[in-house]
Image (cartoon, rainbow, N blue to C red; front, side, top):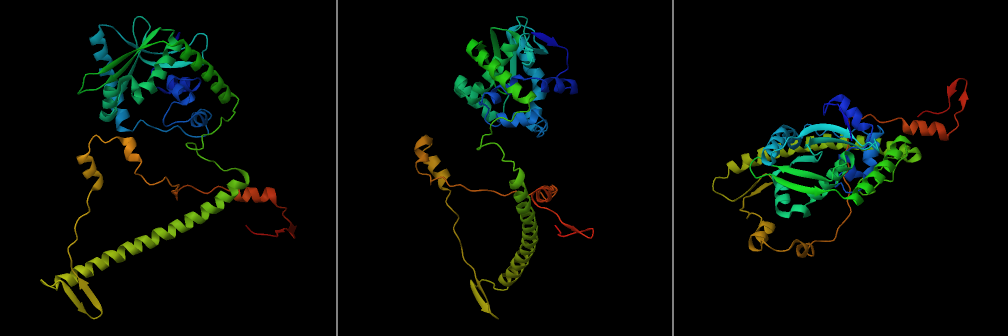
Length: 338
């Protein structure tokens, strides 16, 4: 392994990471990441979309703050010294890794600080937990870079005993990581778009579809703006109506019914809803989830429209119109208006 003298999370470090395949990218490239897809990673690395800034997420900030404490705990527990460093493979320099710690035997130690719920999952399921399975690939990537035969995955917690997994190098996994990383990097450097996952990747309209999208988007924004205005007016009117109703009820004394001037008031008691899901869970706390699914209604497809009024509309419709139509100029004046 070639050790790279960089301070982690520095601008130079970010640049160096973007010039290769890091350990955190391996699970994405191999299709094992629950959130990010290969296309999304490729789009970020080619500058098509911005990387999501996770630095302000409370759990991420907590993890960064507690990482030195986790390293100190590990060093004390196993009577060793860990060095945080950056490195890249000698045989395949495109493979890179930022190590939370490397022990004197060149073995990587990866630190993870999880939320209480996720830590409990690791504690209860061990190697069968989703987090162990996800980060196992990260440690294998680190061993592919360092050449180590063994690595360690540390799940740290301040109120529970930390959990340490010893992970042996899998030559089959390392070969798969190298092959997939080199193939993916070739897509990045040649600007070749990988196939999208229709269930997780965004559809981005182009050409005629983009022109149509712009027209629908303009109409949607106009309607949404009008709906917001009407909803605000309706909310005000409902509030005024409730105030009038309270005033009428205050005049009724102990009467439950009242009517005059075409206005009727009926006061009544309404029982609260039964929280059936909580009731069932209290009566059958160990009822299998798979059996519960059989009582669910069939899955239906729905859509949700979200509008950002601050995003300017593109000129795609106009550009497409100029490409598709012939513009006649008569006396220096265009024969049509857009």
